[in-house]
Length: 358
Image (cartoon, rainbow, N blue to C red; front, side, top):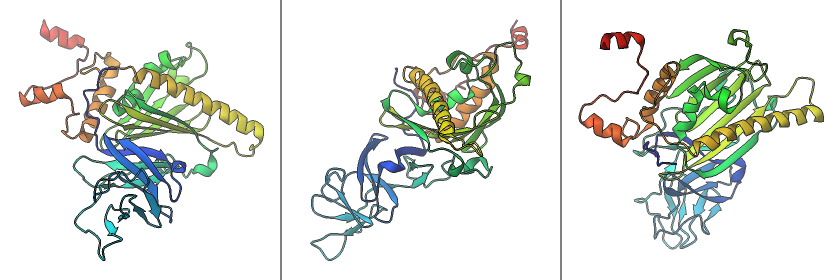
């Protein structure tokens, strides 16, 4: 894959672990946004993520650092740091060093996932990480679903924006996922940090049916560039979470989770087995997308069919707000903007535009 021209350090919430990965007292090494980090959990159960290096003499807290109650202790000289990255104890001195601080990250833990807020300028969170249940406001909870099935792929050469663009790419469903007909989008809302995309879709029947006859679909919420949650309607009840987190300037980690709904009055082994089969199929279809994303070149501007123009244009304009330069981090676009050249997508020319040109 060609190196993405988009910045790999966007603002927003990004998943760095499953909740089960970090138990009370654990210290876990991780690398995201080209920074060495550690995730750890206090004795009281709070998840913490901070930069990995002790501010004393630079020891890596992920190699021998350990949790003592509500703080993490450096293996080199025993300096202790709290969840905010502040030094609270120097064991051979009667006061801590209040002038130094390890960078810590705001953490949101929900849906059995640990998310951090990333912003290169250190701004506080200005929107929430979406919840796959509460986000849809229908009163559902994890108790209504079987335990989630998950997928985790590390250091793939793809950018988080590829995944969100997939959500407005109606045509790929027929050719990648073999839906009998092309879905129709019923909502594009890109007015805030959360965007909403709804569409009508079916995986049953043949290509003789009409989209007007379809009574099933998907609702999606994109919480910035890092997290997308979906719920289905009119089909097997399922909810998904896709989370793409940049590791360095070329690669990202991919995490995916699917919940399959329990059938009221049917909670036997057969129902659970059918749910597991359906969950495996959802994951299989997601891996089809992952295979394409991880070998994709970002096309800018893209050559779009007429029907694709609205969705892709709206999403890319919306996505630009999360990049450090406010323009998507695209070097070519940055150079052109300095020359006051208006960068537009290569959209198909309409008949009326051809007439005016002639």
